[in-house]
Length: 279
Image (tube, rainbow, N blue to C red):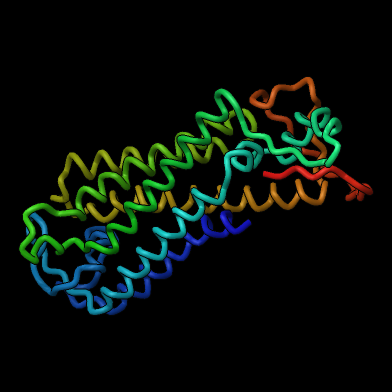
């Protein structure tokens, strides 16, 4: 549950961005279409980029701290949303149904299972790409876009943005693949991955030399925000239903990674000495 809330905390980015841009002192008003998000975190009031643009954000510290906070939250989500949780988040009850017989044989009623094969590889990719993405966001907050102006020949901000874009695309695609044909939400992740991928390519090919650079960057960032929010809500909902037994598992004959079958709500039940599944 903590991991799911850490994922949903990405939504706070929109609030931080809006509040900080209210104090913008650069050329004209801050534009979501042409200005980068990183412009709000620039430490100095100066010309940056090529072609040069004048940026001045008096509340830069708030934006950079917000990016650091969000980066930490993404890493926490990657650590606490475990592989079994990712595995069954698309349909609460799957894990319970698959290992019901095994659990019955355990005298202490406890069993710890992990996904194997395809599911194991996919959940591992998701968690590692999430962690790398979180670290990239953290680095963007620690090293603002005008950091190289302090006399450093090799910047850290720009490579972190590239890693962030790649991490976002891999994360969204991997979640869609893991949940494919198990939940309609997988289509959202594929759609968001396309938006992030196309936006990232437009950023790369234009090199920030168009008046729509801000839109391209936000196509990547906002797609990730939406994806993590969906992931967080689905994980918290599945965890709740799995714990209280509201959802009936799909038939045992149906493979875990197979055609989707919606969970059916059943009345809550209590079992004395019920086995506990630790995930």
